[in-house]
Amino acid sequence: MKILVTGGAGYIGSHTFVELVREGHEPVIFDNFSNASREILPRLEQLTGKTPVMIEGDIRDTVLLSRTLSQQGAEAVIHFAGAKAVGESMKDPLKYYSNNVTGTQSLLEAMQENGVRKIVFSSSATVYGDPEQLPIPETHPLSTANTYGETKLVIENMLRAVSSSGPGWSVILLRYFNPVGAHETGLIGESPDGIPNNLMPYICQVAVGRRDKLQVYGNDYDTPDGTGVRDYIHVKDLAAGHVAAINRIEAPQCTAINLGTGRGTSVLEMVAAFSEAAGKPIPYEIMGRREGDVASCYADPGLAREYLGWEARFGIGEMCRDAWNWQSRNPMGYE
Ligand code: WQD
Image (cartoon, rainbow, N blue to C red; front, side, top):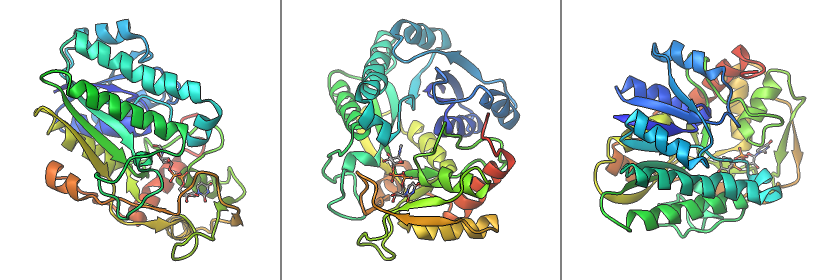
């Protein structure tokens, strides 16, 4: 299937691109490289044996999007493009509404103009807010505690409205938990700009000597060791989840599905697992809680198993092994 992959040069997009090609699909990357490196392109060619078809552009450029969908003969879209830093979203909400909400509206208008009505959307477990029940099922109430999560929820509502507005729309909302790790070759991986917001890239940069120590945000949560518990999922499992969703995108629907392992891991457990994988200690300092963090968040992955025939294959050890393999081979990421 010819698939337009918005944000396809990014961390999750690039890993999904590789899996789509492996499955015989023909993905086309549409990216403005605001949070991705052009260095990814030769590495994708090395991994897939094909020169990636890539159009550089902003998803808010509806005319370019429409022309691209038409010229490429896209039958479906996987929509990754968007801003995704929780902290930044609180300081610059308009950037998040413009990139994420207005950008998605532009994409849907371009799709409608071209009769393309199949979309897999990169949503997030952030739409569950502070969990009222664990593990979290897709029927859990939706609420958000930050602007990034708000934009994800607004987009989900936009997609639900569009899918029920007329015939032929097929929408799958994939709610990611915490993506980590890298392709086993170490050729592609996570390469955040500036100081990493997320736990795993920060640990990687400590391990490779770019940061002195990890700040652990709080050890007084109601969790086994007092530190935050999350459902970390290997980015290759996440990519496989998108392929599974594309294989189910024929039927008219609007379906929300969790992509998680169903297992929770604490910050200190992740530090210990990473130290084991990298064969070196990870110095850390216990700090106060980070605003907006919840104590625990992990998925009920039952619907993904039943509906997509998908479940996570990799554990924390493989996530740490592959993250370290990427970082140690690319100490400065793609720079
Ligand atoms: C994980 C745990 C922190 C950094 C967010 C978004 C989510 C998705 C993933 C985009 C928490 C602790 C972290 C550090 C720490 N983003 N931590 N020191 O906040 O669960 O999820 O990123 O798709 O939508 O909400 O991920 O990796 O920031 O934090 O102690 O330097 O690690 O307190 O317990 P989070 P995270």
